[in-house]
Image (cartoon, rainbow, N blue to C red; front, side):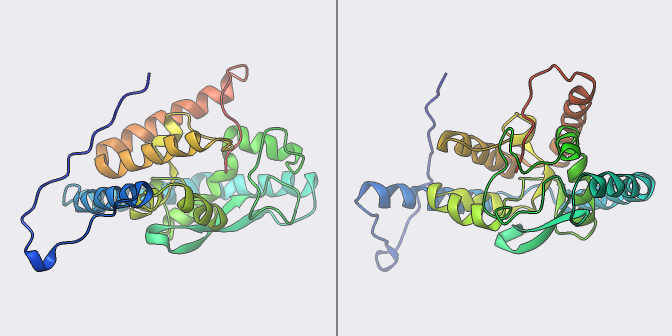
Length: 253
């Protein structure tokens, strides 16, 4: 059921020489409204200890995983990936990070090397995906390489998923408040993912729902919320592995 959303903007006393003219056209008015939303969201700040605790969690979890899991998992996956197709073990793609800064995002390669990787979304039954790639995507093992990005400080374990640069430019033209999600570090998992908004984006509504949850996270982020998202993500992954007949989205950007 759809619910109407309301936005209460604060009334401020503005000097005559500081008054701004509010646009009168529909599109301009909407953009002005989202500009005010942007300003209010950016004024929201989590607890003073939030960033320090979050970074400590990122470093601890990523180091533990890299030392105790990736140390043996990477050679194993490297062999399987090399046997399945020609190309590098890692797929490294430029993506949009904090405040629009671009970074190189790591994943274990799941597709045949192709010229459309930086523009075309992966879809269900995509013929670019290798056989081992399908397994890596279902189990999310392909994304474990992003612990490298977390340790380097380019990503966090929890946050909005990083989009490829091409999609960032495209989506920002469709969604006036899209750039709000760039005010926090991108994450390996986030609110949209635990709400099952994953996979190929076929409709603008699907994109808007994902951005809505990203903005929700921005407004409500806390260390406790991060822990809840981590726990929910872990249970969903376990469910996918041990319950293959459960219908869940399998393809992600």
